[in-house]
Length: 476
Ligand SMILES: Cc1ncc(COP(=O)(O)O)c(C=O)c1O
Image 1 (cartoon, rainbow, N blue to C red):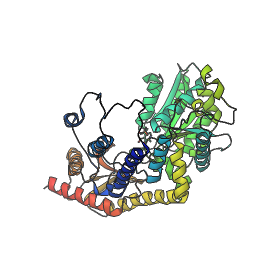
Image 2: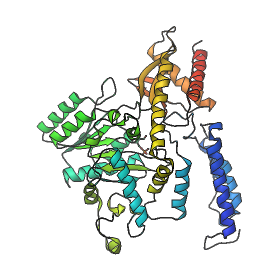
Image 3: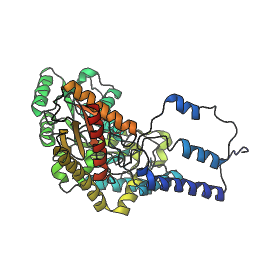
Image 4: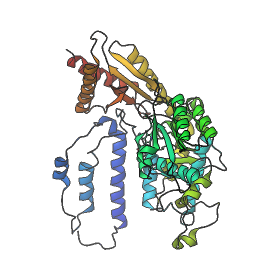
């Protein structure tokens, strides 16, 4: 292709290219359940396909597109596959995928009000929907969409530190549990806390943060002249779906003047369940909440969200006033989201959330969440009826942990660990399902996170039957 210094295509070329892209995405949505959810390749294999110098001369656009469709888009695990049970899957939805395409196509700058007032307004409106769901104050409260849960937690902790410690955080101490997601520790370390400023509180038999132990540690820190400043609770632990005792934790925070952050990155969406406020009891008492639309709110990557009880906490933490942004400051009711978080240039994330909720209605989301919660409970009952399985942590917010442990075999712990690790490996090798292990109370267990509304009980049963077949073969 000859040089194209304006980087443009003709209208016909753009349409032909775009239609092909859409056709490819539609084909994926239609047929992904028939594909393998697992993909593996070594660096060497990938190098052999892709490694080259940046080409000085361009190629025909459809040739490049075909190459990418064939070699890139299929060379991946499919985290929205109905049999993708591991990590926190990303079920996504087509409307939001198209909304992201629109936002990218128009290359909307979602940083300042003046540049894109409707984008800022949609972020305000959709954040308000979330505030209302979590019973946070809608007038005073606020929030921001981030790239994901890690960035939302980071934004929360920077805000908490600013509010509680100002510039001197040398004596500040932060509390979390052994089940808190690792992104929180990463954030704490990123913003400069030393290891000695972090207290990992053990969890109880149900994987909930132990209130008694928390109280003891805080008391000891006070006696030593330290400053307890932040407590992180979890609403939907990544391992088990467990919700910490949020009411008791919030009470301690109030008494001790400690910031209460709740990481509900995956579990927060269960606020939409029939008994959502019971499941996440106390979440409304937090100072800040992380909730990720790109998890159980079915949005494509990347979309996390931080909600705060008072939007001024964000602007007080993140506002800088450089001379080159003077002319777009606007007035205070017109939010510049670059003043509410770390990013200046931001993509227009609110659009996908807005369009998918407007299109499907909140009721569809509510039913999808209830479906997942019920599916995990149905799976638990199914497993309990068999003498092959042991439940290690019961169905909670769509997550269940179990292990192959046939009563007749009476296998020692070490062998059980090896056996379940091997079953997982066999399943992955078969590529039929993505089912990895985790470790709970020192036991290697199989973990299913059933938040895809397109996963059927039949899918789950097929995978479990395959596990049993592998298990029997391995213990013959
Ligand atoms: C509870 C919890 N917090 C935070 C995160 C990190 O979110 P992200 O991967 O979007 O950065 C996860 C990811 O699974 C999570 O489960």
